[in-house]
Image 1 (tube, rainbow, N blue to C red):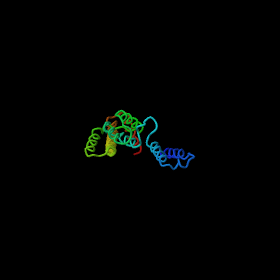
Image 2 (image 1 turned 120 degrees about the vertical axis):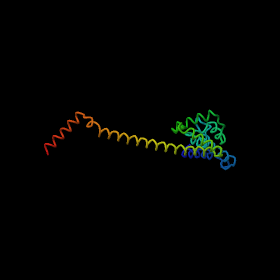
Image 3 (image 1 turned 90 degrees about the vertical axis):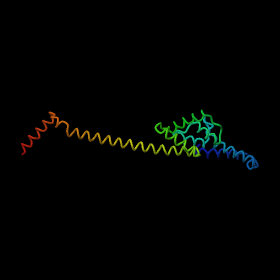
Length: 196
């Protein structure tokens, strides 16, 4: 829920509470407590079709979306957070939607390294959001190295192509006695003789 939507929701709930003609009602501790509960519920219970996905759960699954964290472990971590119990299907399907929304999927090239890093972090007792961050850091670094290696290969190939073209140009038609080059050569020689 956006900040503007949160503010408008709180304003709406406070207005509803203060619309009572009785000042006693507005000041009543139980009524204020009820208002507080309604505000908290509105802020933390998402509306729409994904009703089990409170903001703190959304934050975790969004961080985990481009990683190779096993879905069962992700479900367990999400269930440790407040909110209704999530099933494996809840997590797997929400993960797919988040990956599509963020256009961010795990890269197959980094799967083994990510899972290895995940296992080491888990053994060390790192919490899930930090593990997702560590894996994301690793993936960003590995992608940067991969891009750099591809760029270096591309530059090397471009230079090799340039050198091959230059070598072909220098040793090509003249050395082979190509008729058009022989004529140009003869023409150039004739011009030299005429000038000279």
